[in-house]
Image 1 (tube, rainbow, N blue to C red):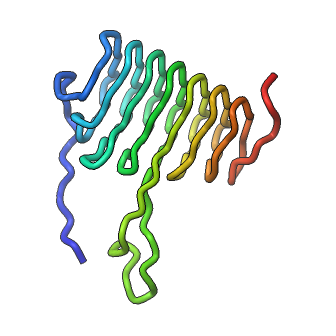
Image 2: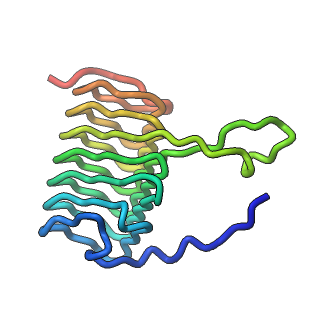
Length: 172
């Protein structure tokens, strides 16, 4: 079993980010790990106590005019790309890695990590407490209901909700 080590406290400076637009707002308590792998466009709001975990092998890219609610958790081990004009509700979790199965004789924590990028296209709205799992693409203009668990791709302009999330209807 590998020995655990600290990931640090997530304190950062704007200058340490790969990119940071001129009108980015960071509320109190925002933490960013691996800031050199995190890029934020212009006019981005990052709410109180949000945690953006960049990753040394991948990137976290957030487009222009995007709102990220308080308490959001993003882990970009597999990469995260978020488009323009996206709303991400409070306490949303976006995950991009999981432990693979190496057999019963290997502890799950010792199993190799499997990475898969999450892509959220332009003009998407993600409801409070949604969980987005590795490898998911959410299409342009889609709306995800509060508390959804998104386990597979959501097509453009779909309205999806539930656990697991399923498409309820298409937006006009």
